Amino acid sequence: MNNATQTDISQSAQPETLSESSNSAYIAAEVSKSVVEHKIVTDAGHSIVLKVFNSQQVSVKGVCVVAAATGVAQYLYQDFALWLTTLGYDVVTFDYDGIGLSVDKHVKYCKSDVLSWAYNDCPAVLDFVERHFFDLECIWIGHSVGGHMLGMMPNTAQISRAITVAAGTGTWWYNSTPTKRVSWFLWYFLVPVTVPLLGYFPGDKLNIMCNLPKGVMMQWRRWCLKEGYAVEKEGQWLKERFANVNVPIHAIAFSDDEMMSMKNIDMLHSQFSSANITRQTVNPKDVGHKRIGHIGWHKERYQSMWEQVFKPLLTG
Image (cartoon, rainbow, N blue to C red):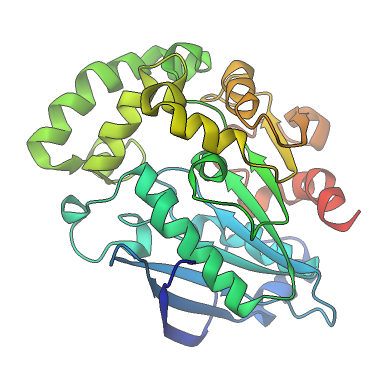
């Protein structure tokens, strides 16, 4: 078991300001919640920051762990986390090493890659959940690479079930058209030029994601240039790790995802060969929206979609 240690940062930190809501009940729920922030130290020796959103329901159903997409800081999932608490769930969000609150120094000093997020960060979070929510069902909600983590972390025994959202392989020639048009430039020119030169990916300056550690971008690039993505590049051990996952997975895809095509999504989930997988493709117009896409579904303006898509999974 991971021996991560924990340090409380704030015992009564209030949620950050959210977008205006027309739902008065939702506003009341927002302001009534306390957010507890923790810093935990992984077995690799680096620290990451997580936040606990406590449900005020009398009977707590379980704990949801929200695992972010690459380059998406945990604060961007705050709207969704607060809404989950109204369903009777405690919620844990976290930043991977080198992202958001888990940047100790400049990101160029971060030594992590995607696999180390899976080896170190995710087990540390799950050990925290096991210590603090040991009697509750644990639901892993993985957005994009957060879904990949299920097949990359050492084991998933602490997870009761999982929901993946817009999670697919990064094989660039299978990406949805808007992303495929530029991904060849990203992987064949921009990343191999800027990352070795600067020691990190300058996403903030380029307005492409955020600043990302060198190891993350170079490893991600190597995977995206392979037909079989990470499993092909890393070999049999990773193929077996994906195949050994037996957590029930509900895979949610958005029909207008500008990054992940249905091919990408099918390829990733086919690697979970021992898991019971159910698939759901959400068309924006069917849930009252013009567009959802790859990033942003977790913002409060999509609450009507949450009610129709996520609520039945969590309260049924």
